[in-house]
Each structure stands twice: as C-alpha cells, then as structure tokens.
Image 1 (cartoon, rainbow, N blue to C red):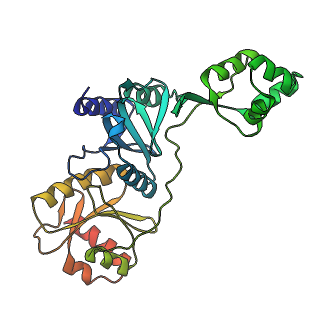
Image 2 (cartoon, rainbow, N blue to C red; image 1 turned 45 degrees about the horizontal axis):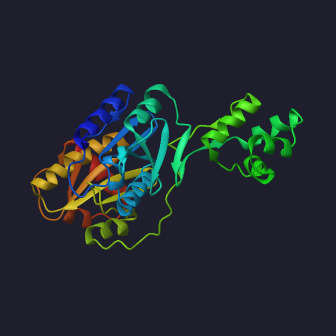
Image 3 (cartoon, helix red, strand yellow; image 1 turned 180 degrees about the horizontal axis):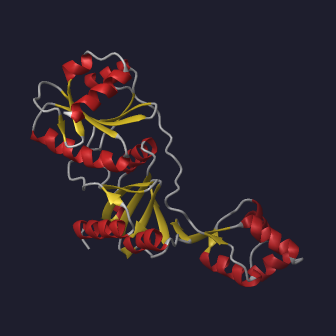
Length: 308
C-alpha cells in the first residue's frame, strides 16, 4: 500500500472514530502529515508505508511539536524492513509510538489498547508485578516454586514483582495460566514521555521581535509554520515570510491546523500586504509588529485583523 492510500485509510478511521482532522500537510519540509482531535485527545500523525523511513531529526521535531501543543505523536505504517507490522502491537521509532492501520483502528474505534510492544529481540508485554505478588502471597506460592514451574530463576520472578520487569509473551501467558488471572497490562500509545530539549537561540529577526514583546518563541525546522509562540494561555502558530503564493498556501494550512489545535494562527509578512487575514490566519506586517510593545496589544491586533 503506498503512502497516499494509507493516509486516506487513516483519515477514514479518524473520521469514523469522531475526530476532526486538519488538511493534509503537503508543504515541505514537513515533519507530520496530519493533526486530529477528538475532545481533549489531540494527535500529530506521521504516515509512512515503511516506518524505517522516519529519521531521528524528524522524529525529534514531531515530539517537540507534540510537547508544546499538548498532543500525542503517532507514526502509522505498514511494515518495517520486509516484515508487516503485527496487529495489536506497538512499535517505537526514536521514541514515537508506531502502529499499523489495523491497530490504530482497534484503539480508536474499539477502545482496545495493544497488549504487546516490539523491542530488540522480539515482542514483549508488561505485567502488573504488584498484583502478581499479591496473588502469589495470598495463595501461599513461594518464589522458588513459581520459578521452577515457570522455568526461570527466583531473581527473575522477584524482578517481575518489584521492578515491573517486562517479559516475553509466552512467559506472560504462562503466568496468567498458572494464576488464572489477568496480569498483562495494556500499552497506551497515546501516553508518551515528553521529549527533553535544550532551548536554542532565536535567530530570525522577525521572531526576535516577538521575544522582545514578551512571548516565548519555539522555532520549528520541519513544520508548515516557523514557530510556536506562547504567552500564558495564548498559543499562536506563527509563520514568517514575504507575501507570495506560497505564503497564501501556508496561511491556509495553518488555519486548518490551528482550528484542530485550538490555537491562534498568524503570519508575519516581511513587507506589505493588502490582506488582513486568510481564512483563520491573521496577516500582520513587520512594521505593525515593530509598533507593538506588549503581548496584549498583539492579541488585540490579531482579533482586529480577523474581524475585518
């Protein structure tokens, strides 16, 4: 299945699951392909037929964007190397949870989270070690007896219970058979660890003006906007450039993204423009920005542009 067909199927699943979706990101460079929201669940999706096509730099950008916009990064693919992704399993690429189309559908349409994740050496599961220990003690089963029946060491059993050490699918199923209890914990691909990042300098002259006004500015490298600009609850997808057809396309895509992300959308035009806004994206000339001293004035100007 090529990427376009896969992306169309992903959009179909999202719509059926009740998500609002942004326009597809066709502008380059792009780290993600689609944004989607259902109530407070907000996703940034990257779609690749072969998940090995994701590089570390792009993955880091997706995770940074997700962190600052309170989204979950998800990679949807079909295969890795020459193997198809297993249904019901979560894979990881540079910290991004990775699912097959069928696994995504199971999660979003059925609420059935995966029980298995892929790592070096095969497929693994997470077991509830504390629950396992409580059941073992309640039934008077010693560490040694359980280790013998399972064919592992006492230390391994102890690690399962105390350190929540993950195990193979076969061992986990045998444990559940021994206790006749469910011990395998589902893997939630929508709960991921936020990426740690070191803030670099803001080098763009126009973005630096926003810093001087009082905004926090997070520059982007592979997104259809140049920065995420923030002050308190005000979050703005911010584009920069001279007025052109490409800026018009960027503004339209930013409008779609901001609607799903629940943010504002602004393009700072380096030069002149007769337009006040394009769809939901306000257009502000650089000279107008230079006259602003406070973030409140910026917010008022954006509202004024969009009301015309």
